Structure formats: structure tokens, C-alpha cells
Length: 157
Length: 104
Image 1 (cartoon, rainbow over the protein chains, first blue to last red):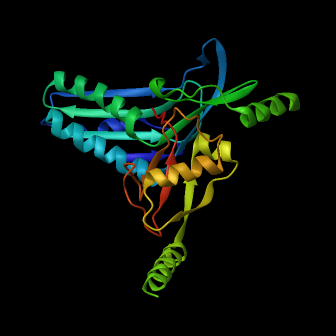
Image 2: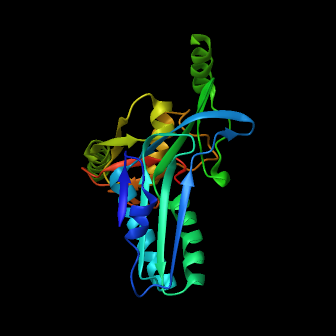
Image 3: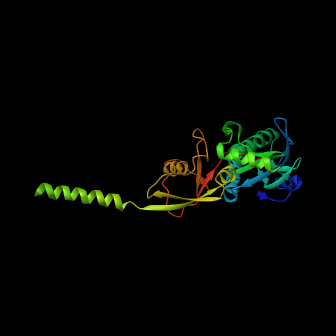
């Protein structure tokens, strides 16, 4: 029910895992990679994970959501490695007897993943890159050595 | 005579304490932003026996002052779980630094 993979994600397959005859609702969320950040064109995204802990934390989120919302089944697949623009990086599928819980749980599952799971994404631009941080943990501009590296990188192009 | 004995005893005690503390070396793994800033995927960090997560991050900030700005808390995972600052580290612990996460 939990999957970390370098392969492209198939939402149909992930959704099929939560289809039970006791369910009246299935909600599937797809996280897809966006082509811009503050007016800059994003060429590609690079995902990195602390695999062992990420799988453990995804399972914790899954168990937490099933208990909180009385769900029948939850499946989560996250892609790592290089993900091109417009591709799917995350699939969350929720199977529930009723739709209200399914919608709430899906929203909260994604929030918890973004808060808790040790996975990082880097946006790659024409002229550099940036590790994306949760908005409330945004790092200030890079310090001196990082700035030097970046300018060296720019000169190389 | 007695005073001399006492001072010798104190001296001996101080010496034992000074030399009796042992260090352990932990291999601290780095990911994403921290890995790139440090230029490597792990760093050896020596701390005293009984050191806590807070002692470890203080030592890491001393060794790598540019890893994270002072206002950003360095989050630590011990044996693949988030560890509070007062957790005591043991030799052989799997210690990883977790930069702000951004999955999804």
C-alpha cells in the first residue's frame, strides 16, 4: 500500500488497491510537477528520499488517516529521481464507505506527507536550481560558499 | 600532611575526570540541501559519551557553520525516527540530518 519508486506512477493501479465492495467512495489525488516558480521556468524536478524513513513515515501517515477517518483502505505512491514537467510525482488513493471522509482524508494525507516524510524536491532551472522547502521553513538565501558555487556554475554556462 | 593528601586526592580526581571522558565517533548522513552544502553524503562527528542530539547539532554547527543559518533548527533522525534534542546518542546509532522536507 506504500510505494517509493523511480518508475512512472500509474494512478489506475494505485486506485485499484483501495477499491472494495464495502466502499461508497474513492478519492484519488495526483501531485503533478509544475513548470514555473515565481516566473522562472522549471525544466525538471529531482526528488530525493531517505528511503527507509520515508517508507516508515508514509506508513505512519496511512495508519493515522485510517484510524482518524474510519477508512477501509489508503494507498500512497511517491516517485523519486528525475521527474519531468507534467508528470505524476505523488498518488494518494482513499477508499471510504462515505465521500465526505474520503475528501477530508485525502486533503489531510497530502498535508501530512508534506509535513512529515523525508523526501526533498529540487527545481532545476536554465541557470541553476533550488531545493524547495515547506513555505514555513523556507531557507534564507544561500550563504557565502553556496553563492560562490552558484556563480561558478553560472560562469561555466 | 593531611592537607597535602587532600589536595593530591583532588588533583587525582580532576585528572581522572579529565582523561576519563571518552568520545564516540558517529557517522552522520546528510541528504538533499545539507549534502550539497557539505559537499559529501556523510560526515564523521566526535562527541562525548552521553552526548545528546543538541550536543551533536552544536558540534556540527561548529564544524560546518554554513550548513544551516542560526535561526533554522537542524532536525535530526536517529535510527530512522525524528529525535528530540534531549535524546542521548549511542555508538552505532544511525544518525541523519533532515533538511526541511518538500515531498509531494
